[in-house]
Length: 171
Image 1 (cartoon, one colour):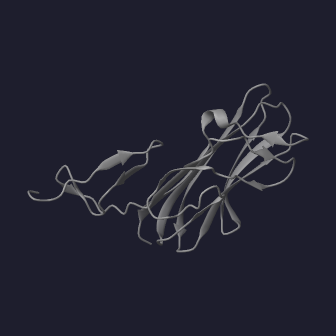
Image 2: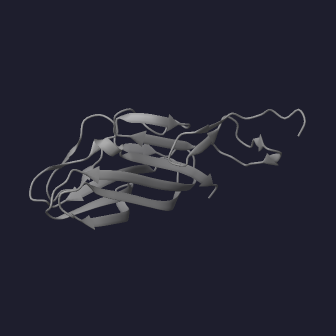
Image 3: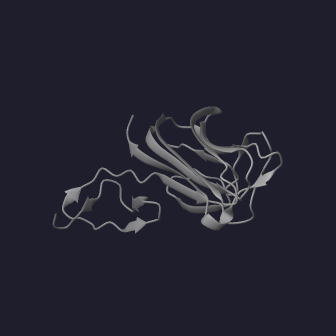
Protein backbone atom coordinates (compact mmCIF):
# COMPACT_ATOMS: atom_id res chain seq x y z
CA UNK A 1 0.00 0.00 0.00
CA UNK A 2 2.72 2.37 -0.95
CA UNK A 3 1.70 6.00 -0.68
CA UNK A 4 -1.28 5.26 1.57
CA UNK A 5 -1.43 7.46 4.65
CA UNK A 6 -0.75 5.75 7.94
CA UNK A 7 -3.56 6.21 10.47
CA UNK A 8 -2.95 7.07 14.07
CA UNK A 9 -4.37 4.42 16.39
CA UNK A 10 -5.35 5.12 19.96
CA UNK A 11 -6.44 2.71 22.68
CA UNK A 12 -8.79 4.48 25.07
CA UNK A 13 -9.05 1.62 27.56
CA UNK A 14 -11.90 -0.82 27.89
CA UNK A 15 -10.97 -2.35 24.53
CA UNK A 16 -12.11 0.64 22.47
CA UNK A 17 -9.90 1.39 19.50
CA UNK A 18 -10.49 4.38 17.26
CA UNK A 19 -8.52 5.58 14.28
CA UNK A 20 -7.95 9.04 12.92
CA UNK A 21 -8.98 7.89 9.42
CA UNK A 22 -12.18 6.10 8.36
CA UNK A 23 -11.47 3.26 5.91
CA UNK A 24 -7.80 3.18 6.88
CA UNK A 25 -5.05 0.84 5.69
CA UNK A 26 -3.51 -0.81 8.73
CA UNK A 27 -0.64 -3.27 8.28
CA UNK A 28 -1.60 -3.69 4.61
CA UNK A 29 -5.26 -4.46 5.35
CA UNK A 30 -8.06 -2.03 4.53
CA UNK A 31 -10.46 -1.66 7.46
CA UNK A 32 -13.89 -0.12 6.93
CA UNK A 33 -13.65 1.78 10.18
CA UNK A 34 -16.21 4.38 11.11
CA UNK A 35 -14.67 5.93 14.17
CA UNK A 36 -17.94 6.51 16.04
CA UNK A 37 -17.19 5.85 19.68
CA UNK A 38 -18.09 7.53 22.92
CA UNK A 39 -16.70 6.61 26.35
CA UNK A 40 -17.71 8.53 29.46
CA UNK A 41 -16.88 7.92 33.11
CA UNK A 42 -17.85 9.12 36.57
CA UNK A 43 -14.72 10.39 38.30
CA UNK A 44 -16.18 13.09 40.55
CA UNK A 45 -18.49 12.74 43.52
CA UNK A 46 -20.50 9.58 44.10
CA UNK A 47 -24.15 9.67 43.05
CA UNK A 48 -26.83 8.69 45.55
CA UNK A 49 -29.35 6.22 44.14
CA UNK A 50 -32.66 6.55 46.02
CA UNK A 51 -34.29 3.46 47.50
CA UNK A 52 -36.66 1.66 45.12
CA UNK A 53 -36.36 4.26 42.33
CA UNK A 54 -34.86 4.04 38.82
CA UNK A 55 -32.21 6.76 38.52
CA UNK A 56 -30.23 7.88 35.46
CA UNK A 57 -26.49 7.92 36.08
CA UNK A 58 -24.92 11.35 35.57
CA UNK A 59 -21.55 11.03 33.80
CA UNK A 60 -18.99 13.76 34.41
CA UNK A 61 -15.90 12.93 32.33
CA UNK A 62 -15.74 12.43 28.58
CA UNK A 63 -12.79 10.18 27.70
CA UNK A 64 -13.42 9.95 23.96
CA UNK A 65 -16.23 11.16 21.71
CA UNK A 66 -15.55 10.90 17.99
CA UNK A 67 -18.99 12.02 16.78
CA UNK A 68 -20.28 14.67 19.26
CA UNK A 69 -22.54 12.13 21.01
CA UNK A 70 -22.19 13.36 24.61
CA UNK A 71 -22.97 16.71 26.21
CA UNK A 72 -20.76 17.41 29.23
CA UNK A 73 -22.09 16.34 32.62
CA UNK A 74 -25.24 14.61 31.37
CA UNK A 75 -26.80 11.17 31.43
CA UNK A 76 -27.27 10.61 27.67
CA UNK A 77 -25.27 9.51 24.67
CA UNK A 78 -27.16 10.55 21.53
CA UNK A 79 -26.64 8.64 18.28
CA UNK A 80 -25.58 10.84 15.33
CA UNK A 81 -25.12 8.09 12.69
CA UNK A 82 -27.45 5.11 12.22
CA UNK A 83 -25.91 1.66 12.60
CA UNK A 84 -25.30 -1.36 14.78
CA UNK A 85 -23.71 -0.32 18.07
CA UNK A 86 -22.25 -2.09 21.08
CA UNK A 87 -23.36 -0.52 24.35
CA UNK A 88 -21.83 -1.35 27.72
CA UNK A 89 -21.60 0.02 31.23
CA UNK A 90 -20.07 -0.77 34.58
CA UNK A 91 -21.11 0.58 37.98
CA UNK A 92 -20.35 -0.25 41.59
CA UNK A 93 -22.37 0.46 44.72
CA UNK A 94 -20.80 1.04 48.14
CA UNK A 95 -21.00 -1.89 50.55
CA UNK A 96 -24.40 -2.53 52.09
CA UNK A 97 -25.82 -5.90 53.11
CA UNK A 98 -29.48 -5.30 52.25
CA UNK A 99 -31.40 -5.76 49.01
CA UNK A 100 -30.68 -5.92 45.30
CA UNK A 101 -28.83 -3.71 42.82
CA UNK A 102 -29.86 -3.44 39.15
CA UNK A 103 -28.13 -1.75 36.20
CA UNK A 104 -29.98 -1.15 32.91
CA UNK A 105 -29.33 0.05 29.36
CA UNK A 106 -32.24 2.29 28.36
CA UNK A 107 -32.84 3.40 24.75
CA UNK A 108 -35.40 6.14 24.13
CA UNK A 109 -36.94 5.41 27.53
CA UNK A 110 -37.29 1.65 26.88
CA UNK A 111 -35.37 -0.77 29.13
CA UNK A 112 -33.32 -3.01 26.82
CA UNK A 113 -30.87 -4.91 29.04
CA UNK A 114 -30.85 -5.46 32.80
CA UNK A 115 -28.27 -6.98 35.12
CA UNK A 116 -29.02 -7.67 38.78
CA UNK A 117 -27.12 -8.76 41.87
CA UNK A 118 -28.25 -9.50 45.42
CA UNK A 119 -26.10 -7.61 47.89
CA UNK A 120 -23.43 -9.77 49.45
CA UNK A 121 -22.77 -7.74 52.56
CA UNK A 122 -19.66 -5.84 53.47
CA UNK A 123 -18.17 -5.59 49.96
CA UNK A 124 -18.81 -3.31 47.00
CA UNK A 125 -21.42 -4.68 44.61
CA UNK A 126 -20.30 -4.54 40.96
CA UNK A 127 -22.63 -4.62 37.96
CA UNK A 128 -21.88 -4.64 34.25
CA UNK A 129 -24.29 -4.70 31.34
CA UNK A 130 -23.73 -4.94 27.60
CA UNK A 131 -25.69 -5.37 24.42
CA UNK A 132 -25.65 -4.90 20.65
CA UNK A 133 -28.44 -2.72 19.24
CA UNK A 134 -29.68 -1.28 15.96
CA UNK A 135 -29.71 2.47 16.61
CA UNK A 136 -30.89 5.41 14.52
CA UNK A 137 -29.96 9.09 14.39
CA UNK A 138 -31.40 10.82 17.45
CA UNK A 139 -31.71 7.70 19.61
CA UNK A 140 -30.94 8.52 23.26
CA UNK A 141 -29.02 5.90 25.24
CA UNK A 142 -28.83 6.14 29.03
CA UNK A 143 -27.79 3.95 31.94
CA UNK A 144 -30.13 3.67 34.92
CA UNK A 145 -29.57 2.13 38.32
CA UNK A 146 -31.98 0.83 40.97
CA UNK A 147 -31.52 -0.52 44.48
CA UNK A 148 -33.67 -1.49 47.46
CA UNK A 149 -31.39 -1.25 50.50
CA UNK A 150 -34.02 0.70 52.45
CA UNK A 151 -32.32 4.10 52.02
CA UNK A 152 -30.31 6.05 49.45
CA UNK A 153 -27.11 4.24 48.44
CA UNK A 154 -24.04 5.80 46.83
CA UNK A 155 -22.28 4.64 43.73
CA UNK A 156 -18.65 3.66 44.22
CA UNK A 157 -16.39 5.96 42.21
CA UNK A 158 -13.15 4.24 43.31
CA UNK A 159 -13.39 1.76 40.42
CA UNK A 160 -14.26 4.29 37.67
CA UNK A 161 -17.81 3.60 36.54
CA UNK A 162 -18.09 3.90 32.76
CA UNK A 163 -20.54 3.94 29.84
CA UNK A 164 -19.58 3.41 26.21
CA UNK A 165 -21.28 3.24 22.83
CA UNK A 166 -19.24 1.96 19.87
CA UNK A 167 -20.29 1.75 16.19
CA UNK A 168 -19.90 -1.73 14.68
CA UNK A 169 -21.53 -1.65 11.22
CA UNK A 170 -24.20 -0.15 9.00
CA UNK A 171 -27.84 -1.15 9.49
